[in-house]
Length: 582
Image 1 (cartoon, one colour):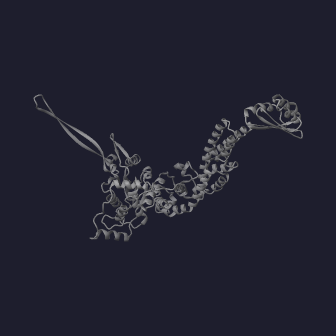
Image 2 (cartoon, helix red, strand yellow):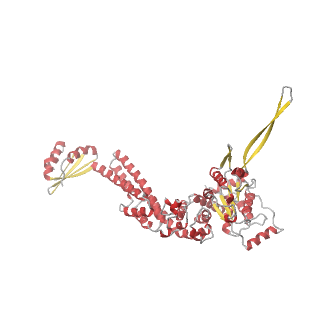
Image 3 (cartoon, rainbow, N blue to C red):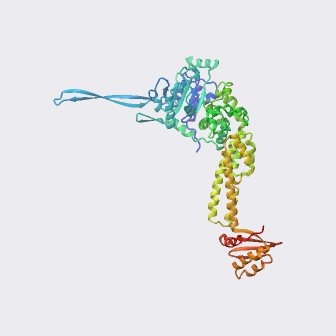
């Protein structure tokens, strides 16, 4: 289905009022990239955004403006973070009701009263509202952050036996001041930080930005309020429409390949270990000190989902039904900047991670895009139309490029699994004793499969890969492929031998031992031909087997051919006991 761009004109009008408007509630943003990112916030279904900047930069004002224009029938679910508060105090409240019971004696006289209290826990607006605002997020206690993580994961919270569900869809906006500017501030927990889709750094305003902002706010001609344009129901219609925006499969692959540049370390398993990571010498790496050398720890895969989610919103906002690679590259710095921890040496050269991603990483990524497309092409060929020439190329480039190496390792894994399935298929089909045509089709199909695409002389190269990566996984997959291939070849050969087999005998052995066996097994129909075979070339049939005898200077060659291997086996069993020509 194609997006219909429902309420699109209204959305554009609302965003213009917020970020280009002339009301006292409008937000003045001159950086076009930051403005674009802010425009995506209300339109990204279940998007979680972190706004970071100094006090008074417009983080809270932007949130209130978004609520007023796009969620006119809702209110902001505010969570004011305070390290002194327990998470229960921040997210729940208790409604207390009392009932008085009057007790009388038999004469009707009041003897005493009894007071009963009912405590009913309730979730605060932050849990129950579709637009959530976490103010001063880096002041939140660890227990509160753990609870927020659970809310984003499960869309609900449990408190004192009651389940409180969060609206779905919703949007969440975190704001925080720089950590060093708050006495009790700290970096968010990594798990919660990874749940945040994008972080938008809101820089301090320039002189002319301040002048423009204050001129609008102090003018008597400036409208007091922003218009309320859309309701929550209408926003859910927009979210549903944005889901229809397409993402091309090749762009998903390209994004996945690009992200490997940031953590495609040759120490694939050990890099996640902090102690081991301290001992990795990136400068001495054979892969030319790539982007991964600047990143201290690897990151997960969730940021890919964040990029695609916001990319779809950007495409819809620009009234396109398909995400472009430019959308993906635009969102990438904002989805990476809070998830990446840079090496101290790199961090000392850049203001922050966002600046490093924009000024250093993205240009490097642009240079590698063609490599990524080439790898995609070779990978698709290796899977769909396996050929040893493609694998040879992968080996060639794997020595210089980590993406090629990782792709080659994945191909080896896939081929190993395929070879196991091929072996099982051959064993299963041969048990049914297929006819010649079916057997030939099986042989052709198997020998053109991935199992037979790996060159058999690549063991030294596989060993180099294993030494480079400090893991024997590629070797185990390679050996599995070769072993399965040899088993398949043996099975096919044996099955062929059941239908055709050739023996060589010394002339004397043939006349004294082989010829008498033919006479014993023969019939009156083939007696003449059998007799001729003693001294000259002859051909005859017995037990559904065609026997061709050829005499060559003291050697007699006997060829057996049959469509009924079991019948031919009676002849071969007799001949196999006779000494063959050495």
